[in-house]
Length: 483
Ligand SMILES: *[C@@H]1O[C@H](CO)[C@@H](O)[C@H](O)[C@H]1NC(C)=O
Ligand SMILES: *[C@@H]1O[C@H](CO)[C@@H](O)[C@H](O)[C@H]1NC(C)=O
Ligand SMILES: *[C@@H]1O[C@H](CO)[C@@H](O)[C@H](O)[C@H]1NC(C)=O
Ligand SMILES: *[C@@H]1O[C@H](CO)[C@@H](O)[C@H](O)[C@H]1NC(C)=O
Ligand SMILES: *[C@@H]1O[C@H](CO)[C@@H](O)[C@H](O)[C@H]1NC(C)=O
Ligand SMILES: *[C@@H]1O[C@H](CO)[C@@H](O)[C@H](O)[C@H]1NC(C)=O
Ligand SMILES: *[C@@H]1O[C@H](CO)[C@@H](O)[C@H](O)[C@H]1NC(C)=O
Ligand SMILES: *[C@@H]1O[C@H](CO)[C@@H](O)[C@H](O)[C@H]1NC(C)=O
Ligand SMILES: *[C@@H]1O[C@H](CO)[C@@H](O)[C@H](O)[C@H]1NC(C)=O
Ligand SMILES: *[C@@H]1O[C@H](CO)[C@@H](O)[C@H](O)[C@H]1NC(C)=O
Ligand SMILES: *[C@@H]1O[C@H](CO)[C@@H](O)[C@H](O)[C@H]1NC(C)=O
Ligand SMILES: *[C@@H]1O[C@H](CO)[C@@H](O)[C@H](O)[C@H]1NC(C)=O
Image 1 (cartoon, rainbow, N blue to C red):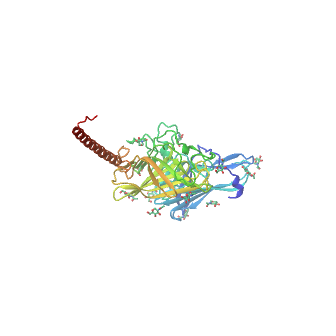
Image 2 (cartoon, protein in one colour):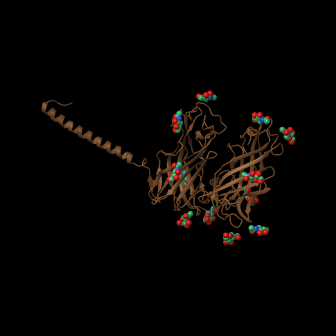
Image 3 (spheres, helix red, strand yellow):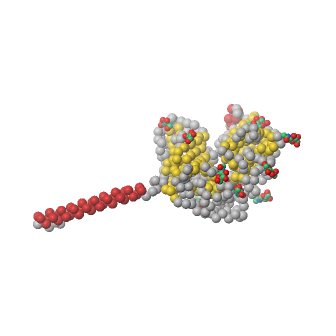
């Protein structure tokens, strides 16, 4: 807003309130409901008080004084909801693309004044916070359900945020004034229901299918429609490259920043953890499975004018969601507070291929010291057939290290990769059908040296025999004993 708010410091963590009952906000035009958001929401705004203490104002969103917005019928592919309360408003904008809905943007406007929310704030007036979470929700004909707490941060992670829980959202395709029966659950719910022995409290809504009613042959995998169950790799993240937080001061001389012009990571970072993802279709059949160790290498500009490369491992707590389309299938990996990487598989006349890669990341000061554009949000995209599988029922395997190139000087490095998309097989096998290997894994590389080596060894023996025979003849002729 204005420079009066330069003092607002986004550093505090959020204290979210639990136990409030969900409120339903319905947007109607011409007596027809077109958009429904049911949630228990909390707004958190960090600010500095007159004693220069950093505080956070947190309050639950109650019944809105006024609901306005736009229905999809008015603006094709878009919809929005504006909840106006006494001294603040919350605006959510939704986008529909390719039949999929997403939460495109959120805005929170609050009038900062000394009172119940803000205690002696060091400056007063209107404060507008915005964010573009681009959060995938569900298909347009379904509603999105997320019992877990969903944090939508404004600006820096750990700062101001809108926190939603026990959420159901449908911004497109609302019929008869109620949510569609079909729904897609969020990855967070899938994860929290994975380990039954986990200490996290199980969520308690109608959206969360009970663990006991169904006994899927394979797994631990979360019983959710169009959702991915993240891996069983509950091991504590050991990846030192990603462990740092945004508040850690960057130090000079850390090995993450390469000298100018270098495009090669200088750290010999530990091996990234093995990640394990499944995307289910509406019939709860896994359509896509992906297992890999992955890291992103990102080139960025330094203040000094040079370049540096940082390598970031995808951590063990990477979450996934996805989509089981007929012609393309996607797994979306979310990690490190707002980072995202999408792998898009496309069906071919025969078989399928990994055809697109995308990465969204942030030049956080902790990971990207001395960046010319600190905290900038970036994205990279990659086109091209990264690998293809000739048979539609086979899976791909590549244990070797591979480098997948995106634009913006980003590469994804993978190891121990196994992938299967467009799977229709409901067996419990982790990967079904035959295996197609990458070139680097195939034994050809070994066969060639073995053949060459064997030929050379044969040649040496022949030469040696010829030499010995010649020598024997020679020594027999000369009458001397050979030694
Ligand atoms: C508010 O606090 C910041 C430091 O947190 C300080 O720089 C600024 O001068 C303060 N503004 C007022 C009006 O006190
Ligand atoms: C909406 O409902 C009101 C009251 O029930 C009715 O008078 C009005 O005609 C309705 N409008 C439409 C567009 O159906
Ligand atoms: C939301 O509604 C309030 C009050 O009607 C209005 O002042 C504000 O501009 C609206 N916000 C958006 C983003 O439309
Ligand atoms: C804010 O209000 C409290 C009482 O409600 C008062 O003690 C305090 O001095 C006020 N602070 C400012 C900066 O006006
Ligand atoms: C909802 O609308 C459909 C047609 O769009 C209709 O067939 C169905 O009976 C309606 N359901 C209810 C509960 O009104
Ligand atoms: C689950 O929800 C029901 C009804 O909403 C409530 O009575 C119960 O206390 C909840 N259980 C837990 C563990 O939250
Ligand atoms: C970090 O390095 C830059 C460039 O070499 C230098 O200008 C700066 O003073 C250093 N900062 C610290 C804290 O050492
Ligand atoms: C930094 O990288 C960019 C893009 O690769 C390149 O154009 C530029 O020349 C590099 N700068 C230095 C100093 O190496
Ligand atoms: C990956 O997940 C599948 C199914 O959820 C499970 O069978 C398999 O053991 C897991 N593999 C690893 C390495 O965690
Ligand atoms: C998934 O979708 C199918 C078909 O739409 C439905 O029958 C099933 O109940 C859904 N499962 C869950 C867990 O929502
Ligand atoms: C996907 O394929 C199924 C079965 O072949 C078909 O019923 C469905 O309509 C297709 N969906 C789309 C979006 O093409
Ligand atoms: C990717 O390829 C598509 C067409 O194949 C093209 O439209 C798009 O611009 C390409 N994107 C990039 C980033 O190269």
